[in-house]
Image 1: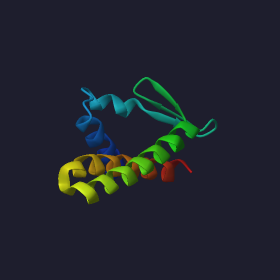
Image 2: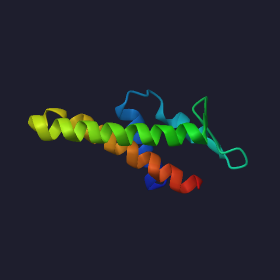
Image 3: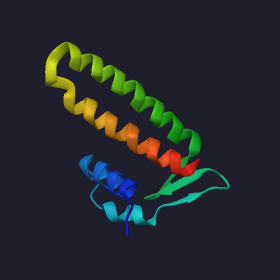
Length: 95
């Protein structure tokens, strides 16, 4: 059974072109090192935090562009918002 957070992450990965999203089922988190093992990637906790800050910055950037240019950048704003929120959910589970 998958949680809502796992489902959001799978949908986001699928939207970004990952072919076999079921491989994420093999993921695990090592709480002793703060490391996430996901689909063959080793992701340290500080990298997850940096990714969250990156997407937060991008949200501000695309919000400003959307405000100035109408809906032209709304898709990018949405994608960055989804990524930022998914990372926040992940970090809330890891903390």
